[in-house]
Image 1 (cartoon, rainbow over the protein chains, first blue to last red):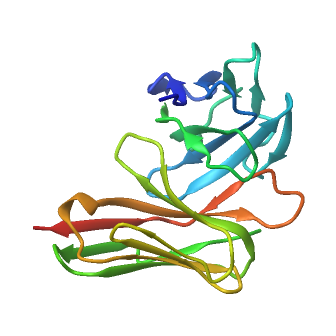
Image 2: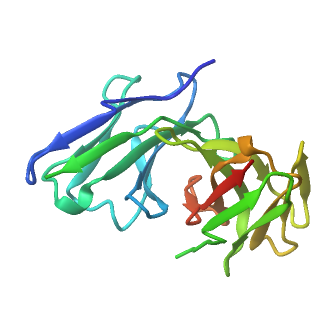
Image 3: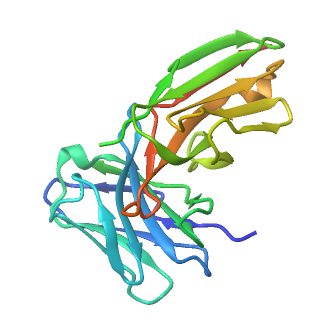
Length: 113
Length: 114
């Protein structure tokens, strides 16, 4: 059964460093999302991506964040200069259509020291 | 900003008991989804409710969407130890500007004791 994959499973970085979180969505899906979950808090929407551009983003998704689908397969989230408060689980999700089920990846745990 | 309030946050019960988890909002959602999340994994969809007043059953789980599409509940009958886990409700925003963004509740950690 097709599934969303994410790498790495755990990323440890120093404050101020750039990180790239990678996702491979399910191949025939058209809408892609990033969410994050700070420990003990709710899952929060970051950004949605469709037709090679951002369709919606939250207040959290400031100019330190960017997304890209460089090769039609990978979907990446870049944080340019990480802060301590960026430490969280980051989930990628994809769906074939707006009103279909979103399939979530297993997440990347980002730890910023 | 749409918010979903999920309650209770923690639920500890004995096997065989019934329970209900609630999800409430002041906003209207085009649909409401319930997920289950295991440690170290992403959320997995259990059910989507779309129509106001809709009731869906999944074995011992009953999901209801409020008439005004602002609230939902998950009822588990005769809970089993295998039901232990984190349950999340998530709403899909109503209106043409929503691109499927999910707004999540805080989650309910359910522990079913043998």
